[in-house]
Amino acid sequence: MTLERLKAVYSLVPVRLFQSSAITMHHSQCPMTNLSATFDPLDLSDPFPMLARARREQPVFYSPAIDYWVVTRYEDVKAIFRDHETYTAANTITPIAPFSAAVKEMLAVGDYTPEPVLSNNVPPGHTRIRALVNRLFTPRRMKSFAPAIRDITERGVQRISQQAPLDIVAELTYEYPAYVLFHVLGVPDADVPQVKAWAGNRIKLYYGRPSAAEQIAMTANLVPFWRYVVELVAEKARAPRDDLTSDLIRMRAGDDSVLTLNEIASCMITLLVAGHETTTAQINNALLHLLTERAHWEALCQAPERIPAALEEMMRYDPSVCAWRRLAAKASRISGVDIPAGANLLLMLHSANRDERVFPEPDDIIFERGNLKDQLAFGYGIHYCVGAPLARLEMTILLETLTRALPEMRLAPGQNIEYTRNISFRGPVELQVTW
Ligand code: HEM
Image (cartoon, rainbow, N blue to C red; front, side):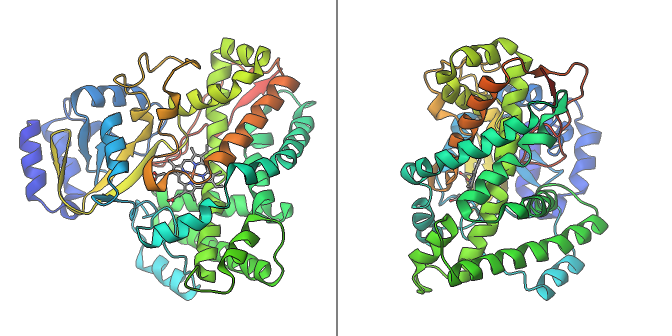
């Protein structure tokens, strides 16, 4: 089947109707030339060769496996981010495997009432809430947290420094961003392991493809996570302190038209998911590549002032949020492909960031690129990652501390790097290092 013919078929068949049958159609009729047939959107283990081919041959293609249109070129991804009226963020937290009736019932019974506030919200609601949340993450406020973050980092690195060899994910990077985030949000340290477990669970539930039984087991964890957040907000409302959760309560000043308590709890659960898994995976990606091509690691040990640029290049090279979503509010055309109203789009940030039209020699690590600020790891436009200043600060402090304390660090030989099956979050599950 030719590309033109495929496009004609897609524009005639309502997108939601052909989700399962289309897989057979592609496999049987066009297995070699059509990316739709071979693309497994949940397999994040080695996506780059296929993405390079897509950018060349079929920059926008339909994936029947998830019923999404996949967008791979930089200019297209950025144009979609920029045009938030044609492409809304309403589907960014929609489960890839739709919730069963049993799961919906469990959520209703459990009073699970988070509402769209940031990531999957649209203007004007998004504009109102985002303006308030922006005020939490100013460079000045972040700077005030730097000494505490340095302290958390020193303690973590000190703790592992006598243990080599070790899995640095399990021993440091899995929990480190959560300790930082909890400190700034004013959540007790002792709750880190529990919240980490709840949050990881939510990623699998929304971005992976759990079985019906797994969906139910994961939902059973979602309800207590929400209750915990609601209680946390109530407690801060009773006794505000010097943290970002209390700042939101103060901004509200008891006025629901500014922000309701349910909206604050919804912001908190969003931050408690978005604010650490992403950073953990980004640090792991950076460590993996810097230690694989160890000259880069050595360069940073000798010149730590290059760390911020190195991190920016690591985010370009292997962004932990490797793909993000948009929903077409109206019909449009992207790279010559007709996208119907109501279509789901999967924006391949890791492909955009390796687009050779924007980043020459995209598969090479080059800290000195002149246009690193154009990389899309934090998104772009009205939903640009609100936590970017915190993520940059904590990753810089961690790399500064590691290169100073453990310059001899290297990857343990003979390991398989594994990635969790899901559509959006890419980072090694385990990373054995030694020194
Ligand atoms: C390296 C770490 C991180 C990466 C790679 C990352 C990436 C992203 C991306 C790609 C988006 C979507 C942007 C868009 O739709 O245009 C996003 C949004 C968001 N991020 Fe991050 N993020 C990171 C760290 C954080 C941290 C530390 C926090 C919180 C403290 C955070 C909170 C959020 C929130 C709340 C949104 C939604 C913003 C909105 O819709 O207005 N992220 N992030």
